[in-house]
Amino acid sequence: MAIANISAFKSQLQGGARPNQFSVEVSFPSGVANVWTAVAPLQASFLVHAASIPPSSVAPANAPYRGRDVYLAGERTFPPWTISVYNTETFSLRNAFESWSEAINSNTDNTGITAPSQYQADLAVVQYDRNNLALKSYKFVDAFPLDVGPIELEYSKNNVIESFQVTFAYQYWVSNTTGSSGVGIALSTPLGI
Image (cartoon, rainbow, N blue to C red; front, top):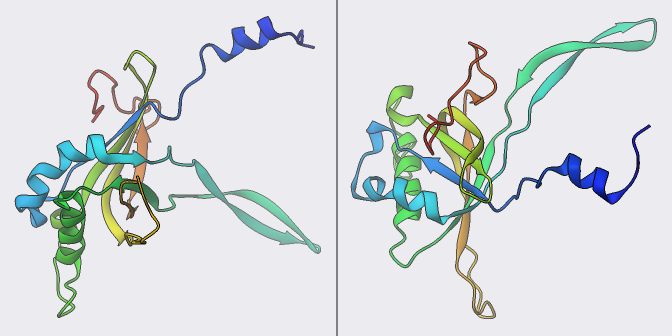
């Protein structure tokens, strides 16, 4: 049994990763290139103020046997990924995400880009330590926006910056410690991708 004291706890915690030390890297696909998407990647690295490290989920495959379910490992699942974005008075990131969504399916005539290579792009989230060194990185492969969320407006909201969420679907994620080759993505650059 481990010795329960503060020194032992601190030696295991080893500094503790901080949830506010991160950046999100957003790239836009070639099929939606415009004035908004040209500036959006740089702005996103500053204005995405909330995100998450993705879950690692394997769904169970059940085999009923004599009135009980026997659970076996099933297929890996990748739930949608959501980011929260500060809005500026230029609405530049909002316009970029709306343009991306509009390119996939037009608001007015139900048409849009059909080639995945034209509307999907890779995204990334990188966790840093207090010295701005990358600790862990995740790349979301072939992502596209499912939902560009609302911006709530209210007379009583003082001293706050507008914010909205964007939810993405993606094919799968890899990290600097996972991937089909077992190598994953490197942390030699801030992007890691």
